[in-house]
Length: 216
Image 1 (cartoon, rainbow, N blue to C red):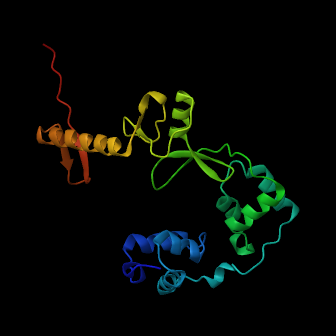
Image 2: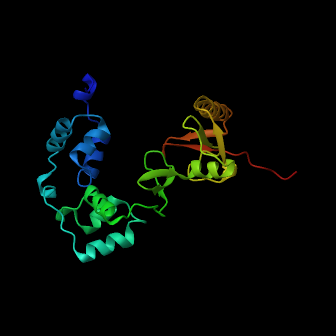
Image 3: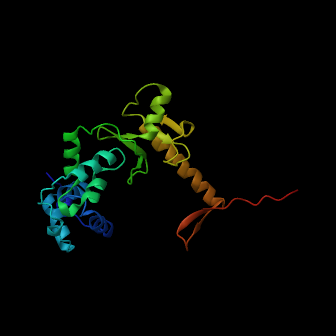
């Protein structure tokens, strides 16, 4: 059962923009799940934003022709199902679910070679049998010769989540990982107090001010 605050969700501008950006490629149920609200609440919000769901022809059954199937076979390892659906035509009834079912029926369920970046976290990953395999965890597992436990976190030492070099990765517990980020925050605060880090109000960002070296 949804909690009270989920039933009466207050939609932010960011929430509304997310819906506008994704309602054509996500179903009402998927949007509802994303915001942890009921499908009825999600549909109501979409309608209040005056977004036309009927124009998407989601009730239309997609018909696969020879060219569609060939495109799927050539691209399924490199493109996401939703990307293939968009190419084949949302207006023709293609959705990521339709593409997935067709892939499954054709036995196209192996490993994807395409490395992607997760929008929410910034982590790199690829797909193996519809499961996300994160690059940083995979690199560590190859290095130590075993699978990581679910309780083991892989920390990016330089805080760059795209840098999955093994020398930049550290296995730690959840509490250790939190402590590392708190430590980094504390050091940043000290650097700010010393004037080595300042804040640029015009560009709304922090700036590193390295002292100028003079030749002696």
